[in-house]
Amino acid sequence: MNKRIVIAVDGPAGSGKSSVCKRVAADLGLQYIDSGAIYRAITWFFMDKYGDPDKVENPVLSLRDVTFSQVFDSSGKSRTFVNDKDVSLLIREESVAKNISIFSENSEVRDFVNAMLRSWASKESIIMDGRDIGTVVFPDADLKIYLDASVDVRTERRVKEYSDLGKNVDENYIRNQIIQRDDKDKSRQLAPLVKAWDAVYIDTSQLSFEEVVEKIKELIKRL
Ligand code: DC
Image (tube, rainbow, N blue to C red; front, top):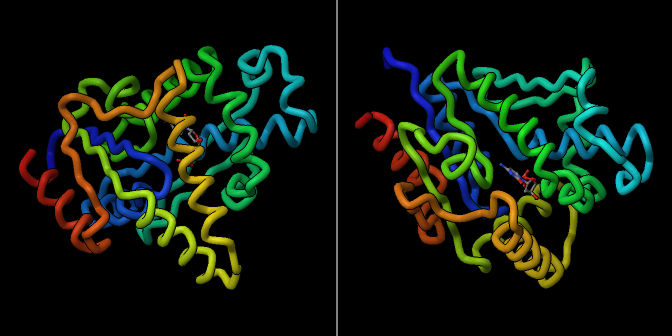
């Protein structure tokens, strides 16, 4: 591919965005950017620094001297750093997820994150996933995809992910968490999760991982 391209992938939690994007990126030599990991990293930073993230008064001012970065390697792994610290695992903690909305619903934080995402994307061809990538961050993306899956299928996938890690979780608890997160992401005032009018809708409920990857690669090859 000669020209620089931007692929925006949005969708609800558990729709498979990040695994699919990582594979597509590795196969096609694109840079993968995980926007959710940045909201997680900001939340982790304030929890680590202040303990209680509710107490942070002017988050963007405090973020001025912090460096966020992300490294995607050709084996398909994405790592997120705050200054020089690798926080990739720390930001996946449930306690971080619980506090994210304090920052993801702050318009100044969103502007700060969007500027960073756009500057990272200005250098090379990228595929980025999130909630508002096709609607707010890159309304002119070359290709927009909205990945979806039923609540039941997403619950099943999450339960399997946990059991693969040797963890037993209550299926009803996971289902309720997914429903609550959907509601939060879709009903918030700022940058809610919504399909961009020109996004290609892919329901992955009845598709295998490989089938979703192939579908997206086909769409990219047509650009
Ligand atoms: O993709 P994820 O589950 O790691 O995202 C973590 C949180 O960040 C999620 O609650 C929604 C929020 N988020 C957002 O507001 N905007 C984005 N572009 C990506 C994620």
